[in-house]
Length: 186
Ligand SMILES: [Fe+2]
Ligand SMILES: [Fe+2]
Image 1: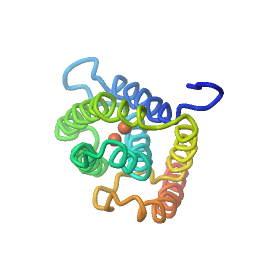
Image 2: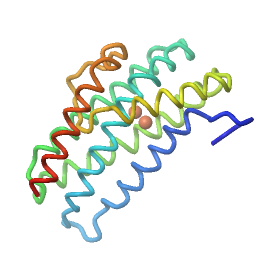
Image 3: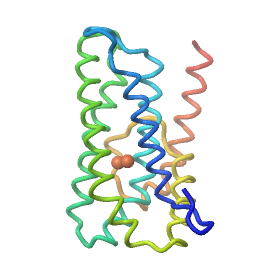
C-alpha cells in the first residue's frame, strides 16, 4: 500500500499474515482424520519462521517505543515463543500421525489468535505513531530482515533485536543451505 508515493511499511506484515492465513486454510482437513500435505506444512513453517524474526528485529522495538506499554510487546513475544515451540515440535514429528495432526491444530489456533492480536492491538498503534517517511523506511528494513531470516523456528534463540540483526542472516544462510540439500536429496 502506498500513501503520497511512500510505502506503508507495515503492509509487509499484513501481506505476510494474508499469506500465512492462506496456508492455514489449505491445511484445513476435508474430512476429519485426513493428513495434511507435507509440503504445505513445510511452507507454513518457512513463512512463519521468517515472518516472526523480521517482527522481532523491527516491529516489537517500535511497538515498545511508540506505545510506552512494554506489556503489549511482552504479550505478543510470548505468543510468538509459544507458536515457535509448537512449530519446532511439529517439524520433528513424523507427519502422518494423529499426534502431528493434533499439534497442527494447536499451531493453527495459536497463529490465528496471534495475528489477530497484532492486527487489533499493535499495528494500529504503531501506524499512528509513525510518519510516512519512517513507515517507508520500516518497510525496507522489514523486507530485508525477512529475506535473510532463518527458515526454521528457533524458539530458544533469544528474541533480542540486536542479537538477531547480527545472527539471523547467518542462521538463515545455514537454513537455506540445508533446505537446498534436502530438496536435492528428495
Ligand atoms: Fe508475530
Ligand atoms: Fe505477525
